[in-house]
Amino acid sequence: MEFHQGQLYHIYNRGNNKQRIFYSKENYTFFLRKMRDHLLKKAQILAYCLITNHFHWLAYINKTRKNMSRSLNKDIGILLRSYTQAINKRYLRTGSLFRQNTKAIELSNRSYARTCFHYIHQNPLRANLVNKMSE
Image (cartoon, rainbow, N blue to C red; front, side):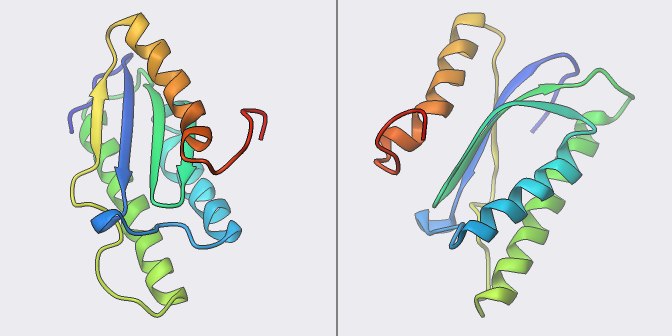
């Protein structure tokens, strides 16, 4: 993935073979802490959604220093690998938890960015995990 400063991105990944990546409420909380620790210095998360087998982030890449793109890629990798290691240890499993390649789409069109924002927030409703948007 290549990230450009001052740009908006839809970043997402799912469980390997569409398997679960979150098994309990504590897993969601742990993942959110990892997001805070690894992403928030380089990106503002404008919207996110954590679903049992995938996640979405709408991220604005901060205007910071050179090589930030490489650094953000590294931080995303560290986040996902360390989360996978914790889940593997906790649930006595082995192997990859996430698909190999995290996807990132640059949202240069405001209309598409707005659509993506709504899509991310409506995802739990569409997956029948909640009954109404306020949940």
